[in-house]
Structures are given as structure tokens and as C-alpha cells.
Amino acid sequence: MDQQPVAIVTGASRGIGRAIAAKLASSGFSVVVNFVQSADRAASVVSEMESQGCQAIAVRADVGKKEDREQLLAECQERFGRLDLLVNNAGIAPPQRVDLLSATEASWEKVFTTNLKGPFFLSQRAATGMIRQIAAGEIPAAKIINISSVSAYAGSRDRADYCIAKAGLAMMTQLLAARLAEESIQVFEICPGIIRTDMTATVTEKYDALIESGLTPIQRWGEASDVAEAVGALVEERFPFSTGQRFHVDGGYHIRRL
Ligand code: NAP
Image 1 (cartoon, rainbow, N blue to C red):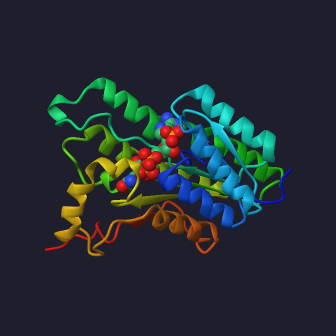
Image 2: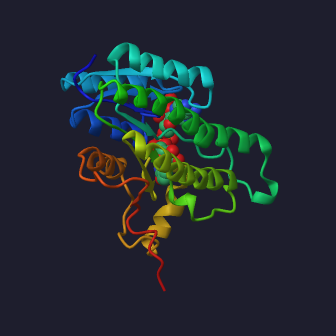
Image 3: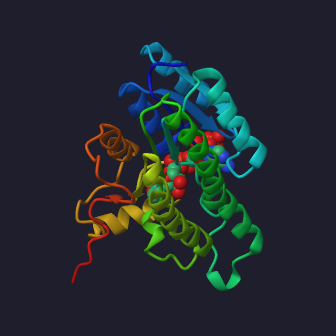
């Protein structure tokens, strides 16, 4: 079994997940870099980490598919023999932005499967393994960190499925935190605002204008590294008597203002 703590980061081939994986590697974690399509990018994340003396593997798995989730956990166990941290980061925007009165079941199913059902059942299976390892004295404690969104509470009428799935992820954090506290597993939600990644690349001009007009008290785009720093703070064990928290990484967007 690996002596270092081990993290699975879903959707770590690019964007926020990639930055989180890099941060965890620099914090002493061995990292499972999950991806679904970008094999080359995931491989480059792994080789970047290895060149810095960190251990990492890339695992292709669609978090929306049960057999892929099982495979992801199995490969982590096989390579590292333990799991200390699951970061549920993988997520997709709806294939199309359409008014909720025209929203389709196909889009709902795709977004919910990836952004909510996948993280829920992956957390369920990961937590079961963590509980077993904690009981066996193989790991001292564990964590699950869910990457939600300001869309969990700020509605976009043309992305109903995304918003409702993210709101569900927020409740999932609360439920898991309440259930898993007695098992020495902390659960947190990180709620990013407008972050510069592939996901927001198609709406750059829209957000440029909104930020310019004062949408966020801190008037700049968020970077993937801003979210990664929050994960880094959580794994430093500075919050021993906390669980279920939502951490805003949004330039103050969540503050109601007159
Ligand atoms: P991104 O740049 O589009 O990257 C998405 C990542 O998720 C990629 O690594 C992708 O893998 C992976 N992925 C997609 N579907 C997957 C699946 N079914 N199974 C496994 N992995 C999958 O997105 P991002 O902006 O970094 O977003 C990361 C998370 O932050 C998402 O949950 C998103 O909702 C949330 N978020 C983003 C923002 C923002 O402004 N960017 C704001 C709030 C919240 P491949 O490369 O293999 O496709």
C-alpha cells in the first residue's frame, strides 16, 4: 500500500480538475487523473506530475456509467491500495442553452447523469471503501469534495438542467456530510463562480461585459488555480471540526447587494 495519501480527481484532464490534480500532487498526494475523452491531455497531466517526482495514473471512466465508476475505483485500489480523497469535479454544460420551456429530456438526462447521478454513486462506492479502510486502520480519515457552481442557487433560465443538477449536488454534500461524519469522512462543497476554462470559452464576451459592469465584487475572471487553492486549503487539515460547508470561490458573487 502507498504511504502517501491518494486522491481521485474526476475530470482532471483539463480546466479546474487539472489544476486541482496539480495542487494535490504538490501537497503530497498520489493522484488518479480521471478523464473521459482527452487521453492525450490526461497523459500530459500525469507526465507533468511524474516529472516533479509525484505518482499519478490516468484512468478513462465516464462518471455517468456504473461499470466505469467501478473500474475507476478498482484501478485506484490496484495501483495505490488506498483512497483518502475523492474530488467530484467532472461536469458538463448542457449541450445547448435553451429556454426552460423548450428544454429537452435528452439534455436533462445527459446533464443529470454526469453532474449528479455519477457523483452520487461514485461517492457512495468510494465512501464504502473509505469506511472499510478507516476501520482497518489503513487510512486515518477521508474526505469528499464536490465542485458545484453558483448555478446551484443563481438561476439561468436557459440552463435549467445544469442549475437543478448543481442544486442537487449541494444537497448531496449536506446529506453525505451528515451521514459520513460518524465514519471520519468530511464532505465539502466548493462553489466556483465564473472561471476561465473550456466550459466558459464560448461565453467569454458575455462574461467579460458582466464582470466589467460589476457583477462580481472582485472584478476579474476566476482562474482554475483559484479553485485548486481552495481544495489545497481543505486538505491541509485546518478544518477538523467542520463538515458540509460550502466554500465560495467566486470573487464575492454570492453577496447580495443593493
Ligand atoms: P471543462 O474545462 O469543460 O473540463 C471538464 C472536465 O470534465 C474534463 O476533464 C472532461 O474530460 C471531464 N468530463 C466531462 N464529462 C465527463 C464524464 N462523463 N466522466 C468523466 N469526466 C468527464 O470544465 P471546467 O470548467 O473545468 O469545470 C469543472 C467543474 O467545475 C464542472 O463540474 C463545472 O460544472 C464546474 N464549474 C465550472 C465553472 C466555470 O466557470 N468554468 C463554474 C462553476 C462550476 P475530457 O477532457 O476527457 O472530456
